Image (cartoon, rainbow, N blue to C red; front, side):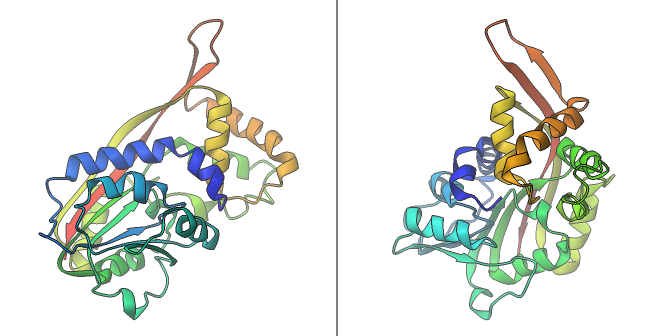
Length: 271
């Protein structure tokens, strides 16, 4: 999960959904005439920050900051993407927010991060506190996803239970929620956000082969599975996943196509 090179090569789902959200909400984002200060929360290797988010920003922005809990990811991002106006730093979004980051940004973005966070109110409060008055945020994260049911199945398997003993830490707080939109909107209103929009939509994604899915799973795998048993782990993972996805052979010369659905939550709000 902290392997920046692996994540950089296997995050096509995250990139697609980031682009979709930015396209949908581009007209709502309140860009200034010049000098915007922007933060990307959970920037990972910095690829989406630079190759996706930055493409939707005006060229005359003042500062772009990417933050991530992983020091390895941040170091990789600074080496490959840092410059005089773009910087990456370590930050735990559900931890202490440094005074230097409070009331410091006109826009806060986050793609595929907040589903990792158990203390949602702390994270959303930190995002609110980062923003200047009138600033806005666009946040994209997972609600329901079949991968979480696969995790739960593996956690009940004696072969993997010692590695997945803390499985609940890595399941989205909204995976089992019957009304995540209402739940999130209420929390944001209590924090102080205005102009709140929350949508939970079913989306589909296709991996062209089990091997492609394997690399994507490995890139975001939160469990410390030893490398020498990961193939065995993935085989059991696929078995657990099989009932929740659609597998079909396009023809005799093509590998299995893996198609699955999940719910993606998109949040917009202003301070």
